[in-house]
Length: 115
Image (cartoon, rainbow, N blue to C red):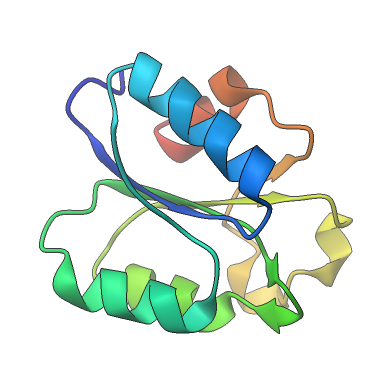
């Protein structure tokens, strides 16, 4: 399911990002990032022509990633939130975006991203 897909990984925790990137690569994905800040995410999204999906942490060292989500949705890139927060923190306008709770189950997260 992931073979050759370009997945943007937005995560500020180094260990979580490393583990998730490794798992995605093992499953055949091309990992874009990981990026750990909104600013870095903006640059990567603008400079990357192919993004097939994105796994996004909501809180990036105190910055909320919703601006990045908007950029991705404008490009019709599917997004899944990966967060330790309760889903009620997510603004209503993102109610259709799946939420994967940390610790992540990669299989469930990928199934939510590509139903």
